[in-house]
Structures are given as C-alpha cells and as structure tokens.
Image (tube, rainbow, N blue to C red; front, top):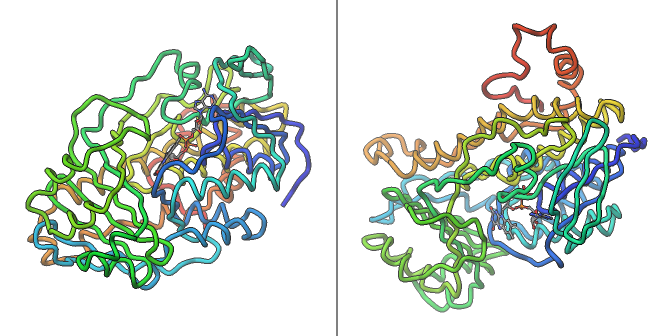
Amino acid sequence: MSTIKTGIKVVVVGAGFGGLTAAIECHRQGHDVEIYENFPELKTLGDIISFGANAGRIYHRWDNGKVVRRLKELCIDLSSYGFRIHKWDTGEVVYHQPSPAQDPEAPVLNGHRGELHEVVFNYARDELKIPIHLGQHVDQYFEDEEKAGIILKNGERVVADVVIGADGVRSKARELVLGYVDKPKSSGYAVWRAWFSNKDMIEDPRTREFCINGDTFNGWIGPDVHFLFSTIKGGKDCCWVLTHRDEHDIDESWSFPGKLEDVYKVLEGWDPTCRAIVEKTPHLVDWKLVYRDPLPTWVSKHARILLLGDAAHPFLPTSAQGATQAMEDGVTIAVCLKRAGKDNVPAAVRVHQELRYERVKAVQKTGESTRDRWHKTDWEKVAKDPKSIEFPREDWIHRFDAEKYAEEMFDETFQKVKHPEKFKDDTLVPVGPIPIAA
Ligand SMILES: Cc1cc2nc3c(=O)[nH]c(=O)nc-3n(C[C@H](O)[C@H](O)[C@H](O)COP(=O)(O)OP(=O)(O)OC[C@H]3O[C@@H](n4cnc5c(N)ncnc54)[C@H](O)[C@@H]3O)c2cc1C
C-alpha cells in the first residue's frame, strides 16, 4: 500500500460512516486530511445498520483486518440460523434463506450503528491520528478554480484543495453544489425502530426462543408492511424495524419518538408473535423515509466540492446499502485524487462522479424493488416458488471491489473527463449494472 504523500489537502465535513471512510481512505492514499463535525461528542446513536460484503472488503484493508475483527465481535452471526421469512397472518415460515458463505476478506457486518461507528471513529482518530474537529458546525462552503473551503459557525475559514461534503441527508454542501435548496419528499413509508435488552423477552415463553439459542433473524411479510426482528450478541440484544405506509410530514431526525399504540394498530390480524415482541419495547423511534430524485450532479461548479454518502444519495433501508455505498464513495474519491495528482484535483472529482453515479443509481433502485417484492407479495407464487420472496443478494452489488474498480477505470475515465470532445459519441460511464471488479 503506497503511503507516498500527495500534498493534496482534503477537508471532510461530517464524521458519519461516509465522512470517516473518506478520511481513512484519503489517509491511506497519502493525502493530508481532516474532518469537521457538528456533534460535540461521540454518542452511540441509532440502532441496526447493515454493511454488505462490498463494505466488508473495505474494512478488511484497514490495519490488515484488525478493524474487521473488532467490528465482528459486535455484529450478528447468522451462519447457522439464516433468515426465516414468515407469512404475516399465519406466521408460517414460507422460506428459510440460508446465510451466504462468509468471505473472510469481505465479511457482511450488521450491528448497532452507534457501536460500530465508535470503532471506526476511534480507529481514525486514535490510531491514524486524523484530526477530527468536533462541535464545529459548518455554515458555508466556498470555492474558486484554485481552492475550496468552509466557514465555521465561529467565523473561522478553512482552505483546502478539495472539500468533501459528507454531511448527511440535510446537507448544507448540497445547497452550494446545486445552487438551490433540494427539499426531500416523503417516500410514502416510515419505519418504527427499536433496540433493547432481552430481559423481558426471556421471561415470556412466547418470545424466549429468540434469545436463548444465539443470534436470530426473522421477517414477517404483509400487505404494504414488513416487520424484521433480530437478536444479536448471542441473543442478548433485540432489535426490530417495521416499515409501513405513512403520508405524514417529513422529519429526517433519528430521535423522533414513536408510539406503541400506533404499532399495535398496524399489527392487528398479524401473527401474535409480532405483538409479543413489540410489547417488550421500552422506547421506539419513528423515522420517516425520505425520497429524493437522483441529484443532477454531486460536483460543484469548479469541481472542488464533492457531495458524498447520504448528502448525495439517500437510500431506502430495504437496499441495506446506504452506509456501504457511502463507504464505496470514500474509497473512490481517495483513489481518484491520488491518481490525478495535486494539479488535477477538479478532474479527479469529476472522474469520481463518472465512476460512481450509475452504480449508485442502480443500487438505490434495489431498495424500491425489494420493498415492492415484499409489500405486494403474490402468495400463490410464493407457495410454488418460495425462493421468490428471499432477500436479494446480487453479486454485482456485493462482490464489487470499489478500490480495484477505481484503479482499473481511472486512466480511461480521466482521458474522457479531460478531453470530452474526443469521446463525443461515447458514454462517459458504463450503463447498467457495473461489471464486478473482484
Ligand atoms: C445519529 C444518526 C443515527 C443513525 N442511525 C442509523 C441506524 O440506526 N440505522 C441505519 O441504517 N442508518 C442510521 N443512520 C444513517 C446512516 O448512518 C447513514 O445513512 C449512512 O451511514 C451514510 O452515512 P453518511 O456519512 O453519508 O451520513 P450521516 O451518517 O448522516 O453523517 C453525516 C454527519 O454529518 C454531520 N453534519 C451534518 N451537517 C453538518 C454541518 N453543517 N457541519 C458539520 N457537520 C455536519 C452530522 O452530524 C453527521 O455526523 C444514522 C445517522 C445518524 C446521523
């Protein structure tokens, strides 16, 4: 792994998984990077989050697998249990989906968002010594042909060769890149989510089985609703998410409280096991799922500011790829900057967009197709072909190697970005599922 210094100064805004990965990968590729983050201190916020094998491959390269080993201790292990898919009313298991064989160099990692975030954050700050400035709200972004920068709430200006706006769904950087405020729309769905200890679950004979035999993962699929329940850390922690129709006003906050009575209403007529699980919930979050039409661009006018992760492309949870795609973004921009060099930063940013845009759009669509597969289930078809209800795990998503792909595609795409006139009749980016770079 090359650690030759490139002299490129990168400012990353946001220390979520997208921003942290961008910073770690920029550090790996020899750039000089620092992070500015709004939250004043690290808190273990959130609940279940999924990282596909395409993220596991990225984590695996950090400190020769040391970071993956730490994450794995906190993650669900479904190697023997698999995923059991139930019909919503009868509760019968209509399909038992086995877990895919784990690739040690590209493990699937699902666990508590806050706990996994802490591992990645500490690795970046304490081991790589990446400066992470907490409690720093970025108020403004600016750029010209030579540089880009941010202005903090306290008035301080920070200048860099490139600024990465990894500032989440309510991104401020997006305003500068687009030149207007892009309001999210309701997707027509919301998710109730909860995470709690197994204490009450073990005491109830109806729910005990989920907590005494190691980790479990069950899903109940019903009309326009699905309910997913898992137990983690050997059955010690419990977590459920229930996706349902919701036309209310949009709120992108994670801490919006939900009401159990509303959940019970949706679960009327359902397998009573679902209610027995939900009854044990001490606290739940009501998260409205927002939708955005794909942004026309993630790159600012002078190509010195780049939107990354949720700031550029929010995902529906049914894709299970939101955080993973944010990580792939971070890997790609770091490679592009290294390959282009300090004198070609804007071209690097444009190449990044060419390499990422169509892939991200295609992966985003899987969130809708899986939701529709489950919410509009044809039960007769499932009876004939139970596998048709499985959670899709497609190779073109999961076996993808973002770093290898960026390295392989860089030269050709760089030429197209620098000399678009020579490629008039050619598309800049591959269309449709991206070939696997494995
Ligand atoms: C508190 C929280 C809890 C979450 N919980 C879950 C969960 O349980 N399950 C799940 O699937 N996904 C969860 N997510 C979302 C998930 O982490 C992201 O969808 C995914 O990881 C992509 O990450 P990102 O880095 O692009 O964006 P985010 O993870 O949203 O990170 C954006 C970061 O930018 C910071 N920021 C925003 N504006 C500014 C500003 N003006 N100045 C400085 N910093 C700024 C934010 O504080 C935040 O830390 C959560 C996100 C957050 C912020």
